[in-house]
Image 1 (tube, one colour):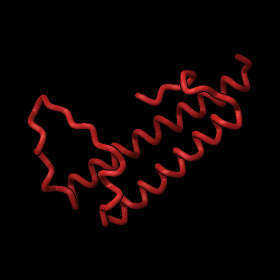
Image 2 (tube, rainbow, N blue to C red):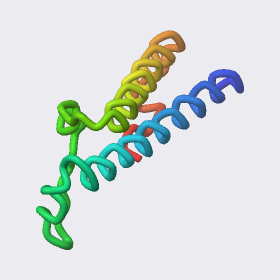
Image 3 (tube, rainbow, N blue to C red):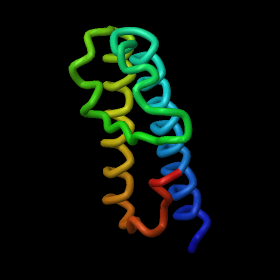
Image 4 (tube, helix red, strand yellow):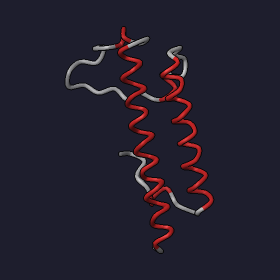
Length: 95
C-alpha cells in the first residue's frame, strides 16, 4: 500500500475510534439522564448491545448534539472509503 493510501486508512480508523468514543458518551449521558430508569437493568456480568436508534428519541440536547456529530463522522467515513476505493476489510469497525 502506498504511503498516501495508508495515511487515509489511518485517518478513517481514527474517525471510527472517535465515533465509538462519542457513542460511549451518548450511552453514558443517556443512562445518567433521561434514560436513568434503565441503569442497572442488565445484571453484573451480562452485556447488552445498544444501537444508535435506542437514543434517537432522547430529548437531551447534549445527546442530540453528539448523535449529529456521530452521523456526520459516519457519513464522512463512508465517503472517504468510497472515494479512495477502500474496502471494508482494510479498516476495523469493531474496535
